[in-house]
Image (tube, rainbow, N blue to C red; front, side, top):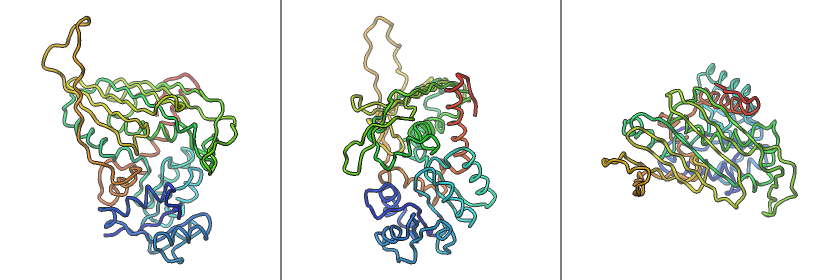
Length: 372
């Protein structure tokens, strides 16, 4: 059965996030046969009509109120792809109308909003999805297959290091990132998109301890012409270190830092087992939408060299994985909804990640070990 889809936040601009990452994959197989765009909604009727027209929809299917798209009988599922502070307000009418709902991450601007949405979704008996799409990426799913096969043996430890320079060059429309009340911050968005697959593959933290600091006292947002605006006081904590023990007993270390372009963006993540290891490598720390190499190392049959002996380079072998359906990794979320694939983050699972974010902030503030 084809799913009739309404999208809140779609733009006529072909370079806009929702257009590239939602419409892009929906036009490709197999999604083009599983979904049909039937309605759009934006903050104004004028922009909604323009967005709809760009996708071949009649003006009657363009809305400026979330209640209108939610009550459209020609809509089975509503996607909310807007700024974080608006997620709750725009998703609730669809839930009340008993529509299936897909909301970008974070689910809410805070945990209370996320919990309320999850509770209503459960009460209404609807399907839900959240844009923590990295779990569904081909390389994460392949890694999960390898781990569950027992090829690595018992997982004893894992270490992830990521650096990103994007915080120093965000567009003006993302300036709400600098508002602590918006729900959009360094931990809730870039960090969470990486630590979620971290926990999906290896299990949740039994306890964690975090440090969270600010390395850049000012931030500049890029104007529409690409030139930087005047520096403003930054409210963004931009350097995170988390360590702890996973429920499996494995030790875990996670470091993610904002940098300038003086340091190339990078992601390096090693999962160490008793019989073998996996490694993720990328020149983009946004694992949820970046092409990331997956490599495997098996325990050598010959004895390891002594401390003072010359060692041969480790023979990491790249694991072949399929490409993303399209840029952004969002296509895999739609596919999981349509086909019932495992790994989909629903509202209930998203609430768990909200609690983890809260635990990181508590630990950093109080200097305590935290659970969530």
